[in-house]
Length: 253
Image 1 (tube, rainbow, N blue to C red):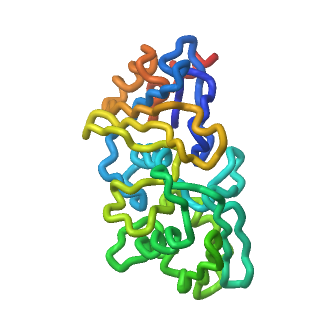
Image 2: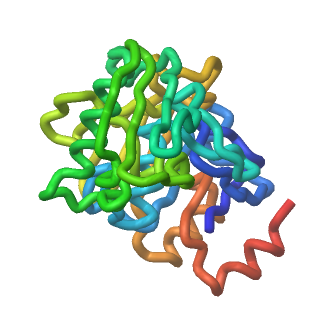
C-alpha cells in the first residue's frame, strides 16, 4: 500500500494507479521533485527478476514493455502502438515511434534480443517459462514484429503488460545497468541510502513525465518511514504499517 502527502501527481504513466492520501502539508511536490520513502534498497537492478516490491517500484520508473495497463485495469499500448492475433499461434506487434532514454529508437531487434535473454537456459527471469513458448521471431518491417508460439496462447498480451518484461536495447552488456524506455533515468544511487532518477527527455508520451525527479530514500524501519511522511520529509511511502492505518485514515483530507 502507498500513501502520499498530496493529491495525485502523475509521474509518467506508472504501470498502475497509486492510491494516495492527501494531507494538510506538502513536501516537495510543488517543485516537481517527488520524494519517496522506500521500505528497502533494491537488492538487484535486473528488471527481469522479482526481488521485491520496492525494487519493482523503482524499475517501473526506468523501463517500459510493449504493453501496460490503464488506471482502470484495461490493456493499453506502451512501446507497442497496436497488437493483434493474426493466426492462432501468431501475434503481431506494431511499435510506436519510441526511444530509449539514450535516444536510440526501439526496434523489433530490441524486442527479439530481450525475449531471447529472458528465455535463455541460464536465465532466472520471472517470465522465462512463458517466453520460452515463443518459437519464432519475424521482423515484418522496421517497426513490426511477429511472434509465433508452439501452441495458441490467448493470454500472450498479458505477458507483455507485466512489468517484469521490459524491452531493453539489443546487445546490452549488463542488464542491471541497462538503458530503459521509461519516463525516468537513473542518475545516482548509494547502496542502502537512496536512488535518484530524473525525467527522460526521450519519453514517448507527450508532456510526460510531469515530474523533474524522483528520489527514493530508504527507510527500512517502518516507524521512521511513517514519521518521515507525517513530518513532510517525504511525499509518498510504501508499506504503511498496520498500526498506522487508523492514524492515516484520520488525517485523510
